[in-house]
Image 1: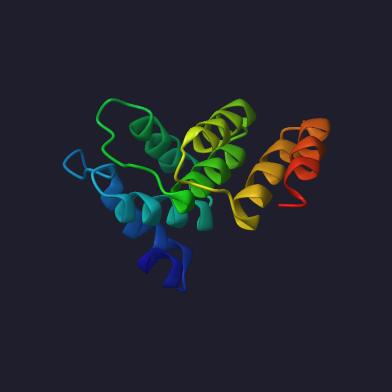
Image 2: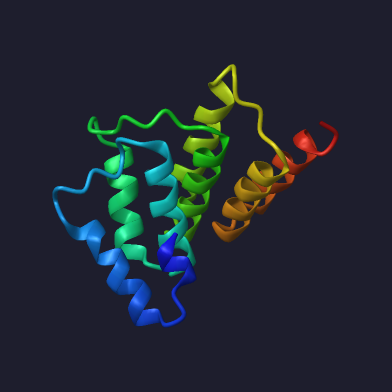
Length: 132
């Protein structure tokens, strides 16, 4: 979160360099993981965002995603141009019995689909969720 408050870009990127250390485990705590995604998205740090998603997809992941985490993962996938991965995260979220998408999550998947030029799929998601 400190990187979001940094007033100069070089200060923010310097703070994010801690993520490059091999001893930093970003997927052992959901709050830490969410902060990493949020900071990388805010600073458009595609390299670290890609690394975070790779760790998230690995067996080393101990994060049990919440609605917020799924929304951030979908946004991260969209930022990296991975529409299929965003849709996979959306589908995984829908399979969870205890997580119900809110307007923010629906907006994230619609944005991801539109950015990935899957406009018909985005419209289908909108139509499905607009009345809920």
